[in-house]
Image 1 (tube, rainbow, N blue to C red):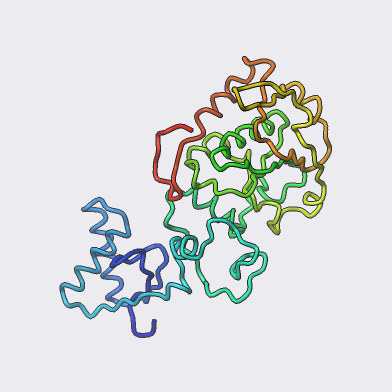
Image 2 (cartoon, rainbow, N blue to C red; image 1 turned 135 degrees about the horizontal axis):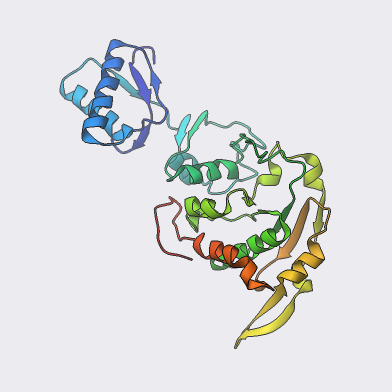
Length: 302
């Protein structure tokens, strides 16, 4: 950086990324950013597009301005760190893991290559790279209660089972800790957050250093399937049912910080008083919109 005006990473072939930049306060750099500002304003484009256009103009003018590309391993973008690094979920043996950080080549992670602020925060939380606790004590609350469960046996059933878990959380006033599965590959996180913000936690939540130790060890296991009634749903498939009243009677007064309900596949929670829970039913219908990993906008409900 000694002889360059600017150092920044590649975002894709032939495109610089403007999200993490090292700048020398040179006359040339100040000129570059004035150009970038004017282009963004006049052409109504985002800051990254404007910066790249400004750099192209300087190059065409044979300017003495010098820009260098940052080492991709040291300054990894979202594509490099998550996709190339095979980190769609937190791995215990990952040398860059927050839990066991050893010989990690990455110094800075730019959390891009995924859309929306909500999805970026969720992804950082999932990888234990988010430390902000917030006014609601996202991690450190000693009074909040939780429930967790075992992920669905089939990937296509994950959303159905998550709906059941959220219903249990609603009835018991407990926050749902997700099992290990790639939520960002299934649903649009921004829409989901609109309805269920602070009602769920990422699968790595209990491993976070700010979560109280007493909470991690104050857990009880209940197999919810042992409390349900079995009935025939289809010709070759059965489903079990438990009423909202039974859920409250059995588990509402539990003093344990975390209840693990085990396998929820094929379990349906029915409301005893539909009128009082219409709002929650609507939330369950509208919160789930299909998405790919990159969180491209979708209007298709799941």
